[in-house]
Image (cartoon, rainbow, N blue to C red; front, side, top):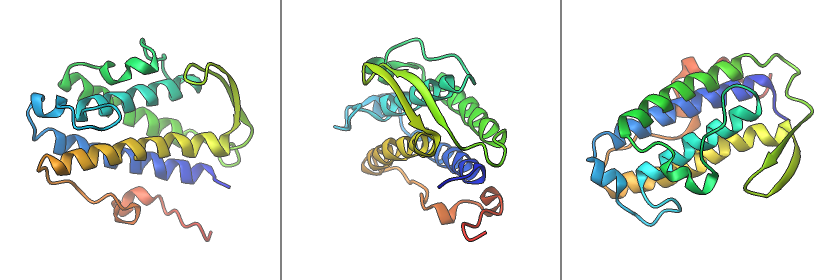
Length: 176
């Protein structure tokens, strides 16, 4: 299925894409970032706040940081200040890369057990499902942000994985 190098590459892709999304969003006014644009979380700011919240909840399940101090239904307002949101995103992306880099070969096995507030029950799922989900969730909502940024007239960067700076590929080759 997946291995530690794949998770490490996705962690770098995640950071690269977050930097691009935040750079584009930084060209807007605070009011433009908070404008309800019809996405699931409404605005660019709220969607980016939710993504930070989600990464915090997931990394807390791996004992890498404390969980967020609000429930998921309030995640769009998790971090109200734009500069604080940017700083926390940068720190979280650094933490995600460090967490992924700490994964040794052969450790992406077994299950993760946690209580899901969203599902209202205890959950157990294979790491081979959970780990890609963390990054897939980011990609899903970042796609919403990308669409909102484009509609707002922002210049956005490429999102294709193969266009990521080669230094971040870590020599990953699925054929090896």
